[in-house]
Image: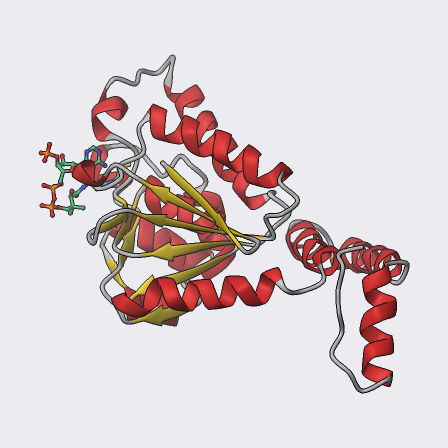
Length: 255
Ligand code: COA
C-alpha cells in the first residue's frame, strides 16, 4: 500500500500488482489503517484510491484466502471487509475511486464504497462471486442496488459479466470515463477542486446525502435543515456570502 499526500489530497495506491491488487488480509488491514490515518489528518480534504500497475484497480478478494473459509469463518471474513469499506464510506471526506483497470468482486465493492468513481476507458467492473459459489460479501449486494436499482443489480450479480467502462457509465455505476492517461490528471483536478471548497460544507454534504439515503424523506429533510443551520454559524459561510456581496473571490479558512 502506498500513501502520498499533496496539497490537501491523499492518494492511496493498492500495491500488489503481481496479483492484480487482489485484496488479501494484509492489504485490507493496511487499507483500514490508512483510512484511519487520513480520517484524522485535518490537512487531508479529499482522498483518491487507485491500483498500481496498468492492469487492475483490484481483481477482488484474494481467492487463495477465500478458499480457506468455512461456514464458521465466512461471516467474519465478510464482516472484516465490510468494516473497512464502510469506514471509507464514512470517512467524512470525499473519496474518489480512480478505476484504472479490473475492478472485480471485492475490488468493485471497494469502488462502490467510494463516493465517486472515475474510470479509465479500459476499466472493467463486475461482481463475479457467484461463479465461485458465493455472493458479493463486502457490501456489493447492498451498495450496487442503491446505485443502479434492484433489478439491474440482481441481473449484474447473476450474469457475473465484466462490464465495460462505457456501459458502467450508462448504468450510473461510474461517474466519469476518460482515456487511461487522463485518469489520474482528471481525478486529481476534481480532488483539488473539492479540497478548495469550505470543509464544513463538504463534510455536511456527505453526511446529509449518505445519511438521508437510508431514511424517510421527512427525516432526511430534517437532517438537511439541521446541517444548513449549523453551516450558517461558520466563518466560511460569513466569508462566502460577504465575498459575493463585495464582488470578490472568497477566502475560506475551514472555520
Ligand atoms: N485472488 C488471488 N489472485 C488473483 C486474483 C484474485 N482475486 N485475481 C488475479 N489473481 C492473480 C492470478 O492468480 C495470477 O497470479 P499468478 O501470476 O501467481 O498465477 C495473477 O494475479 C495475474 O492474474 P491472471 O489471471 O494471470 O491475469 P489475466 O490477465 O489472465 O486475467 C482476470 C485477469 C482479472 C480476468 C483474472 O485474474 C480473474 O478472473 N481474477 C479473479 C477475478 C475474481 O473472480 N474476483 C472475485 C473474487 S471475490
